[in-house]
Structures are given as C-alpha cells and as structure tokens.
Length: 388
Image 1 (cartoon, rainbow, N blue to C red):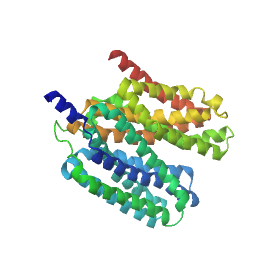
Image 2: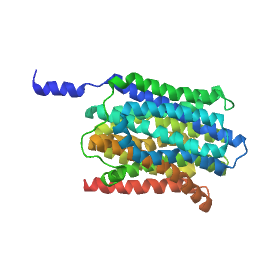
Image 3: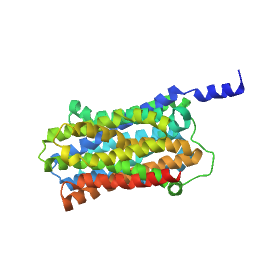
Image 4: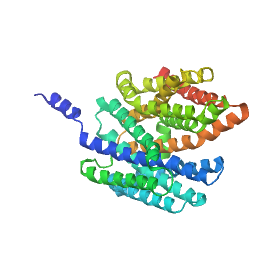
C-alpha cells in the first residue's frame, strides 16, 4: 500500500461518534430555544401586552448573541470548548428557571438577553468542532445534514407546546430538561472532541469582517429573510384576507423546507461549489418575491414557501461550508463568532425595517423588502463570481 493511499484512507475516515454527539448537543439546545420563543410570547400576550413590547422582549435574545460574539474566541481558548459548552448549558437552564419563576416583562428583558448570551457560545463552539473534524470532500453533505437536523430540532420546540400547553411549569420543565440534556451529551462526548484550534494568529470578530465581508452579509441576509417572513407573514396574509390557520400552515411549510432541503443543497455545494450554490439560493429567494402577490391565494404558494424555506437558510449552510474551505485555526473560531454576530444583527434589523416598509407602502412592502435584500446579495455574489 502506497503512502498516498494511506493518506487518502486517513482523510476518508469520519469520526461519526464525535459528529453525532456535536449534532445531538446542538439539536437538543435548538429544541429548547424553539420552545421558548413562542411560549414566552403566548404568556406575554395573555398578560395583555402590546405587540411592540412583545417584539422588544423577543429581541433581547438575538441581542445577547450580538454582545457575546466578540468574547467567544477568548473564552473558548481559556476555558476549553467542552467546559464552556457544558457551562453554557447549565447557565441557560438556570436562566429559564428564573424566567418561569418571575413572569414579568421587565424582568424578562435582561433574562432573555442572558439566554441568548449563554446560547451563542454553544453554537459557535459546536460549529467550529464540526468544521474541524469534517473531511473536506464530505463537508457539503455533513454541514447540510447538520443544518437540517438542527432546523428540525428548532421546529420541534413549538410542537412540544401542543403536548405541554403554555401555562404553568410543564412547558418550562421541558425547556430546562432539554438545556440540561445538552450539557450531559456534551459531557459524554467530550473525550472524542478535538481541542479548540490554537494554530495561527488570534483574529478578532472585527478583524474577520475584513477577511470575509461577503460571507457575513450572506449570513445577515439569511437571518433577516427568515425573521421577516416568520414575524410578518401573518400580517401580509391578513391584509390579503387569508385565514390565520392557512397562514400558520404556510409558515410551517416554510420551516419544513428549511429542514428538508439543506442536505440536497450540501450535496449541490460539493458538486458545483459552495459559491455557485449560494448564488443559486439567493436567486431563488429573489425569484420567489416576484410572483408572491399573484399566487398567494393559489396552490402555487405552498411549493413556493417550501423552497423559500430551504434556499433562504441555504445561504447560511453554504456560508458555513465556505468558512471551512477558507479558514482554519483561530481564524475559524473568530469566523464562527462573527457569523453569530451577523445572524443576531440580521435577526434584529430585518423585521423592523420590513415592518416600516409595510407601514409606508402597504402589505406589498413584505415581498419588496425581501426582494431588495436578496438583490443586493445577488449583485455582490455575481460580481465576485465574475472576478473569480
């Protein structure tokens, strides 16, 4: 057996146990997060609070993502990835216990901020681990699988409320249990996980912005697109006279497309390249904006929102793939943290901007906002493709 074939076999080895542990950890965490968003909104709505105040409360979680992001590279180097992940799981569980104990909107503001602050490092660390141990030739399908499973976990959270309800301690117990289970899984697989990368020069989150501005804008676009549709699609449907149950079902189909299509997009990234797959995703997002006003009341809207769910989050999946292709070591950690920062900013900025557009020009401000956002990214990607 030649040295080259031995090297090839070594590169083909996939540490499935470690990968399964990483994905399981983040998926369980996503279930808990997916549960908290609608649960807390339902509780605040029963208390008679305005939609603006409920939205402001929800914005505290992505704000926690934004503030924590620059701190993660240094924290992961000092504490170690596994210790930091386990600690964040425990602190998130304790925070949710306090939220359940004190059901008051002004107390929830800092608590929801802390929930985002503690959740963010776990995502950053897990994605860094996964990119580090994934063989380059399989990165597309594995990152697609990761995105699909985590998206499904996030969708399971709201579904669990149909079993536990939204009153009293039962739904909170589900969330706390999921957070703690996340820590236990991380503890169990810790011996199989790599150390946080230490090679290369330390790069700050701000420094990474200069290295990969297009990737960060793609992440921003993915977050803004998702949040705009999830938060304002009901308003758009109501303006067109659509029943609430139908709009809720359309949102469910959007989330389903998000979860189902990432594996296919990951395989496409392996075959055609992550850059071209990203360009396809953003063009599909843009194309869907054009017929929406004309097909919203027809059956064609169902496949449209399903594909939208896949390609909009596909921008994030293909960004992760390119991150692994282009960066290693400490720069990789900084890149994952910068992704979290860009996602938080997109999540906070997207909905208010689209809501203002709808207030100024009517309900068609929704597809126009989504189309403008997609157009800018499409132009940037097309320009890079022509240069490259």
